[in-house]
Structures are given as C-alpha cells and as structure tokens.
Image 1: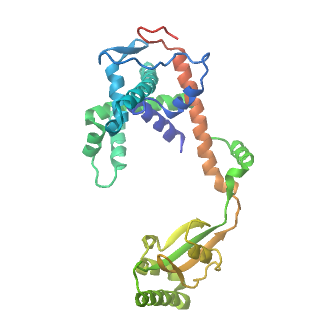
Image 2: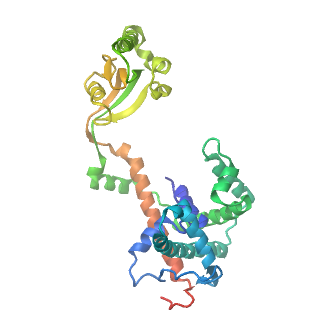
Image 3: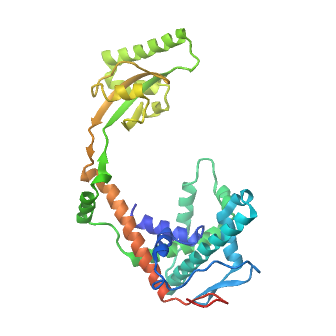
Length: 350
C-alpha cells in the first residue's frame, strides 16, 4: 500500500466517522499512559437529551445526539438481536469510542481549516467516481447512498472533509516508504516469517462425476478423461490451457485450468499425490478423486525453503510503511491533542 493510499484510508475512517477515529489512533490510545494522555475519555452517562453537550473541542460543541447517531450506525441491525441489558452496556462502550473519535475528527478538521487546505469540486467529483467504480456489479450510487443513510450532497460534504484531512495528514507525516537497508534487516531478523513449504503450480482438466453415478457412467467419464489425456500427450501438449477452457468441468477452465501454486494439505490426497510426484511439464496419468477424473500438468515446482528477499520485498515494504504511518499518525494526533482544549461539561478536566 502506498503512502497516499494509507493516508487516504486513515482519513476516510476519521472523516466519515463510522468508527469515529482511525485504527492507527485507536491502537495508540490503548497504550497511552495516564501521564501522557492529554484528555481522559469517560463512559457517557445515561442520555438526557439530544442537545446535551458531551464534550467541547477548542470551542466546538459535540452533542449527545451526534454521538448517539454514530453509535446507532455502528450497531446497525444488531440491535434487534441484543437483550436490553446487553444493549445498554454495548452502547456505553461504543459511546466512549465514538466520543474519542469525534474529538480526533474535530481536531483534524480544525487543523485543515487553520492551514487553509482547499478541496476543489473536481477533486470531489473524482472521489465520487472512485466510489461508484468500486461498487459491486449491479449496484448504483443511489443504492450506496440508501445503504449509508445519506444524500449525495451530504456525501460530497463529507468528501470535502475527507480529502482535506487526507492532504493534511500526507503533508505532516511525510514519506513512510522504508529504505532498502530497513527492508533487508527486517527480512534477516524475521526468518520464520519467510519460510515457504513445497509448492507446485498446476493446471488440470476435470471430467466431473456425479456422486450418484453408476459403474457405466463412471467408465464413460474415465474414458473421456483418458481420451483428453491421450490427445494432449500425442500432439496437443502445448494446448493444455486451450483444451482445459474447452472441455474442463472445473470453474478454473476460465483460466485455462490454472489452479495457481498449491501446497500439501490443500487438495484431496489423490490429487496431491499426483501433483507432488509426477514430472514437471508432463501430462500425467488420469487421477480419480471424489470430484471426478483429472488430467494434470505440473508447470513448475518450488522446494520448501526461505522466500527470496526479492519476492519478500513487496510484503515487507507494505508492512513497514503501515507501521511508519501508524507511528506518524499517533504522533500527529498526540501533538494536536496536547495543544487542544478538550472540556467535558460537568466533569473535571483531565
């Protein structure tokens, strides 16, 4: 994940407010000591009115109604499945998390305003198109808005905040991509993470056999598989993918019968035995399994051992970048909170 993607993901979590705060900050907040935590987040009392102010952040009032709406959004349809006493306890816990998240969101929004960060209509249009492009097949933006319980205008307003926070975070946290030496050190110090079992890259053609098949049908299907194998062995070995696409009963036919890299224990024993015993590049004997009859070709086999640094690098870079981003976010939030005035009306400030 790149820096911009990480910061965007964090900003979306904060600005949209489903969890009312970034995962990076939530993780950090749990580890803060009493001495370093600038404000104390307390469980909210029983609600008295939607207009009750539960916290004031640099003069900005956050009401009970705003917290309750976010809690309701987080609970969703679970409410109907919970006993009243369970619901009260869960709501109190969520209200604490939501309140702290709203504080973070408010501080970030105020920082964006202070820095004069602007988001154009074109920027919002682009974000809207990105959301629409990520919708499941058959779903429209109207479906998305209905599911989120919001309007297009409200979503666009949220995106202005989201994109502004994204830019603020990116500008403050800097480049989080790890260097080559850091990647190499992580690779050497975490040897156990990069041990890979023996693997084989396999294609197959399946002639499916119904569970209730009698001996006659079973013989017919085996003969069909034998004929496919014979044609590949005699003259069409290089056409395995094409033949698989035409004749296989397995969904993998769409990929020319390609199953990717598999390890021991991932397939039925009969298939595994063939995969890890027959020669690479050879169309092996027909294999019978509970699914039917298989014509198998092993394209390559990788022995067990440590994954190379080159192959491990993308994973290591993403992991370290995420760790750097979380640390940078934690510091950024700490700095904002340390310089903020956060007041809980009716409670002693911490």
